[in-house]
Length: 346
Image (cartoon, rainbow, N blue to C red; front, side, top):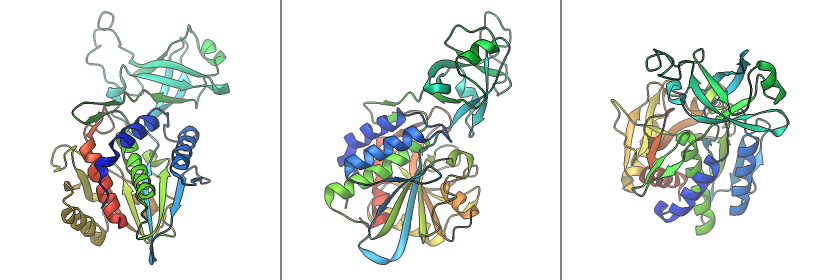
């Protein structure tokens, strides 16, 4: 049985490395390249699919079933929508962030020619010394902008920098690991889940283990906009998504646990698969919680909507304040790695 705690330093290092690569949904070249390097360093030959998913095929010990597991490396972010006459960048969201949490956040704007500029998300009413409604104005796409850290005062000035409609905007994730084991960062959804997949792959190589059945590991893109795994699982019998677990009102999961989702906005997950995951957690004394996520969708839902004839399940470390300033705990990541490995028959 794999001891996930053994891989603490690998988990922290890998998390920091992939968090440092901007990957707002649809902007995947750099994160795919980083994943290929990480996988190669472990002795795996990853491949990038036509849709820019990274895939690793691992032979199993037995035949009779095909498994797919996925985690997504795309994140929330924004895209340049327009530039106002005075040089303010107006944006459109990528995915469903809690937009008021963007207010005051540093960001990077990816312009033509490979240029990268910095800026800050702000409210139109950004100063209490100037605007009476600075503390009460609604924060949405129509009342916020990006202040560019360049001397610009017109739309023409911004265009001269190579910034145009369609340029990607990525937020600083602010990744921090505390002495108490908490991991604070934007985009733990789902780079924490991606690290769980990487850790399972690392453990298999180091400990000379193989999964029970042939298993395809997928690192998907476009999950945050609903179709990440639409091409995944077509040749598999089961698909296990490793994504964030929800923490909050009417939910049992804590940040120190692995969550087993029994139902989300797409409906129930495969009953037999869910029961098997819960049984494995109990057998191996893995700290877990089972929950219903009412406002959630996963790569499994995307595969189902695309027509995959596959059983589906969902697990992940408990994440607090999802789609905002997120937080989990190393214990939750360990528990998720442990349940993933148990599911794979390791």
